[in-house]
Image 1 (spheres, one colour):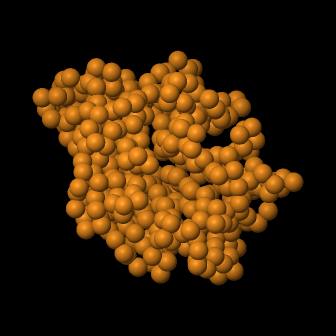
Image 2 (cartoon, helix red, strand yellow):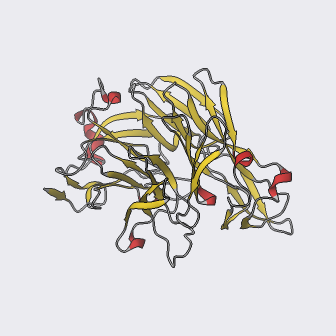
Image 3 (cartoon, helix red, strand yellow):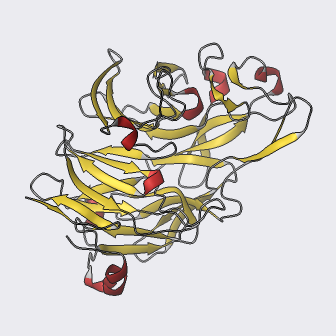
Length: 387
């Protein structure tokens, strides 16, 4: 049966018969903690973090936690003074990111760390022990005029894009890929409502089983698969279909699941978010979840989605701090409203969570961990609420 409670925090709804049983990892923005919660919303494990998580944390199969973060004042990458055609500064843009990627063991010891002030929105630990990362790169001045779209600003304003780097455990870069060398200036066009200072804004770099990279470029509404051997883009999709999306993932059936944020959505009177499953062979959308009415579910920035082993989908709505699970039939079977409020980019305290991940009870990374809600009794009295 479903259990529902009237509350603005913790687990607000849990259908035990239909939800995928496990533990959910959350690392709220604006804080210095990563929490593992059970299906009732109680904290069962905790990692204190040196840096604010930006964007998120993952639990590795070896039981270690890996996260990306930075000091609040310098975690967000390059700063750009955006000038108008007269050379007057109209506003200052701070690009997002986190300059440290850190791996912690269960005793909170740092077992690996990589630092680069230009790291940005995603990382992926590969099976060979290397880590794929995204970092900012400047578009050469001679190429800027070839890039189409966007809001035109002073010509001398620097334009940034993205590059991929693969880093081995020794901290050595063993492979790299530059977006301006492989994307198409004619078709990979800026959103018309984005200023011409960050062309691509890559927010996903998942390494596929064959070694290729599944990427997402927010400001050009593009998801694609990059051939690791040649660097060429072997499949691309998105413009006119999705808007400023995040976190595409490859499913076992060969389809791709993606969080379609919907900011600056074309051909729509209002903004709304959705989660979709697209078939890369046909470029057809085969499954979709959205609100009813559509604008009741919306997160213009960040957010993510995870396909669970029972076929359900775990969805993170960053802007509201909401994590919820839906079935293939689009029935909501679990919901968690983050009780963790912290400052973010100079704003009032808010519940932002970039992404979250559910790990089944049989996940190797949980083996041997002491998962004990009683150990965090006082914290759970404040933040955890059983249903």
